[in-house]
Length: 458
Image (spheres, rainbow, N blue to C red):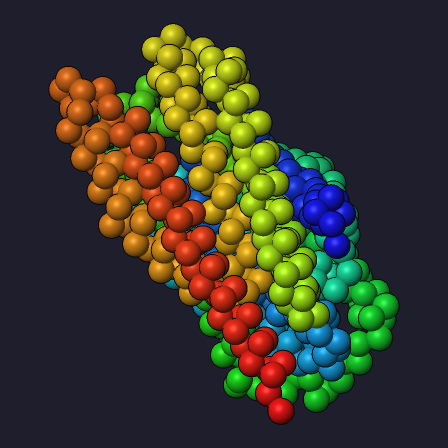
């Protein structure tokens, strides 16, 4: 396949994922808007509950993302009989993950919030949100398994319907649960957690329907035998999924630590940091989507035994991501004052936010590369590299460097507090991208060596 045709395939796979992520972001934004109108304590409680819950949800999403390359590989190699077995193991692992996630939401997360010393009113809202949200966890697991099945065996386009369904259900239910209506009592910010339960079950239902149609389309036979626990397959699933989950956890913790170190510098510094953090979160969605597309395409080519095509997919994904990041970085740099003005108006905060957005422009280049290469590593089942690289670069390079720059430069040690940490993050991402690429080259050589040995073997 030519590079032009492959670029088209990647684009068609990546864009639905990107649109879905926009829908998901709008869903979380509706929590903030509704809770904010209910009161300051409600907004603070929902923000705290979301930060606690997102840890578990991100790890769940990362873990079950391993299903996509595993299924795509077997589809490419024509091993359709293995697909029901993977689904069966995903269900067993989902049950185990459900127990861990429920325990986290009901026991560990409330304990952590108590240790943070938040007010009783804010704690009440956050804790009640988490109690409601527990009922959404099984739906989120079902949704992730179904979604990854559909994306691996058919297309990413149905994911748009999942996101659209979630957003259409979320907004009116948020309003009803937060403010009440006639016989429905007003629950305040905690009502966002109850609304999320209905939202995730609605999304899970749509994803299940899509999965059922895809299974019939691919003539995959599901039976009781596929539900039999298989230690070897579960081990392979865990080996590929757990590093991604803990890598995401490590990244979230680094940003949490940086926010905790910055918050003591006052509202101006923290507000400017939040502006930068919010914008990179939006720009992150593009390379993340490309990385998902690369994982699907490359794993399928590897299943077909086409090593060169798999390499082409990885190269195209990297260039695609680099090109998009260059455009968004140039736009961020050129319009940093205007972008900062969308969030803040106070002159001193606006000036600092604009400085951070200049750094965000540099941030996007290595961030895009490492996200796309991360998708390639998932395709080659080399996710162990992800966790090791993230762990080393985040905690042994980026955070210490950021702390030294923030506290050791500038008059009084505070002029470079936010900037220093963002420079540390940029260095972290650059080191990540380099280590990811080294790991990818090793995985490609190893995979091609195994393929060559299988070819010449008598």
